[in-house]
Amino acid sequence: MLRKISTDKAPAAIGPYSQGIIVNGMLFASGQIPINPDTGEIEGRDISAQAEQVCKNIGALLAEAGTDYTRVVKTTCFLADMGDFAAFNEVYAKYFTEKPARSCVAVKTLPKNVLCEVEVIAEV
Image (cartoon, rainbow, N blue to C red; front, side, top):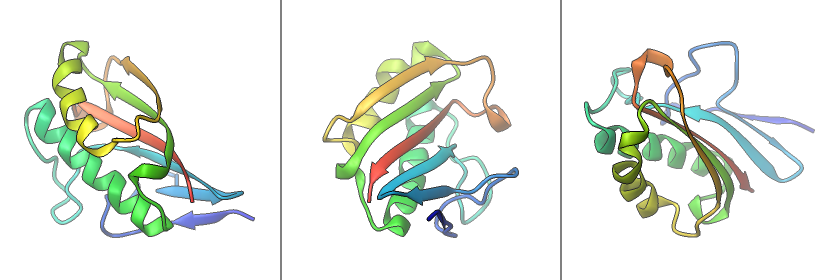
């Protein structure tokens, strides 16, 4: 059975999708961008500040699902500029301490022209 995850501690979906879905003990979370859920505005102008907000949003989804960063098994990271890779990794490493499997790619454009987006799969 599918269970949808929704929390006001992370940005609301800006399209026809759910913040996350739990199925068979696994959370599949939609990509998070650096929107501050309290203001609805993009948080930060540089990659470090935006990555920090993205990770906070992911943490809120993980908590709502009853899990945490230590149980994340896979992330997919999207960067607007691969030149931000090292600075992004500095923030990422503070949160994903168990070093889950990961893909990281540069993309042409992200929603709202943000600098990064991250999606996760985690054990619940």
